Amino acid sequence: LELEKVIGTTTVSNTTFCTNASNGDVIYASGAMAVHYSARENRQRKFFRSDRAISCICASEDGRYLAIGERGHMPCVTVWDISSGEKIKTLIGHKHGVGCVAFSPNGKYLVTVGFKYDKQLMLWDWNEQESAVSVQKVGNKVNGLSFSHDGSYFVTCGDRHLKWWYMQQSSAGVVSELYGKPASILEAHKTSIFTDVVCSTPASGGKTANASIYCTTTNGLLCVFQETRLMDKWVKLESPAAFGLSFCPSTPFNPLGALAICCADGIV
Image 1 (cartoon, rainbow, N blue to C red):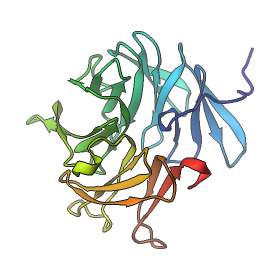
Image 2 (cartoon, rainbow, N blue to C red):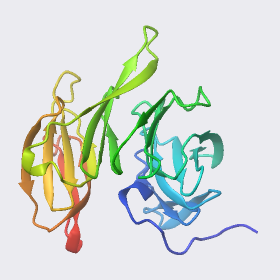
Image 3 (spheres, one colour):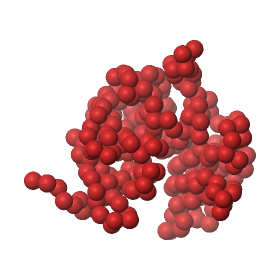
C-alpha cells in the first residue's frame, strides 16, 4: 500500500511545524507522520514516518535536512534527507520526550531540548558523532530556541526562562562545550512565560553589525534584547497573548526587515 494523503494535523505549537527555506514548502506533524506540503502545488509531496508521535520538527537552512523529535519515554531524534525521503541518522539521549530541535545555520550542529521532566539540552555534531557533544541541565520548561545569524550562540526561551548559550570551540575550530548565561530581564518581567524567540540578522547585512533578539510572552508582550543579553525595549501588543514570531531579513523593498507575530484572537 502507498500512502496518498494525510487528513488532519496534530500541530499545536510552534515546534511542530516548519518551512523549507529553499522552496517555501511547509512541513507539519500529524500523529507519527511529518507531512511535506507544497502550497504552490496545493498537494502533499512527501511523508516522513516516525515510530512515535512527533513532538517537534525543524528543517536546515539550506533545505536539505529535516530533524524530527519524538514524544514518550526514551525518545529518538531522527535526521532525514528531505529530497530523497531517507532516514540518515538516529540520535538517542533524551529520556522523556523532545520539546524543541534546531539546526545551526551551517547545518553541522543540532540542538535538542527535552520536555519539562527531561531537563536536558543537548548539542550534537549529528553527522560525525553518535553521542552528544555537550549535555546541559535546564531547570524550567523550554518553549523555543533560535540560533544567531553566525551560529556562534543560540537562545532558549520558556517558563521564566531566557538564556544565551555560547558554543566554545577548540583550536581546531570544533565545538567542544556549551556554557549558558541568563538574560538581564527587567524586574517587572522576571516571571514572564516566553513563548517564542527569534534572532534577527544585522540590518546592514554585515557580520560586525549588532543583531536583535525578539521574544513573545503569554501576557501579550514583545520584548527586544541586545546580543549582550540586555533588555533593550518592550511593547504591549494589541492582543492578550502572543505565541510565536518570524523574522524576515532586510530586502531592497524593505531595508529594515519585518517581524510577524501570531497572537490570540486570530490576530497577526
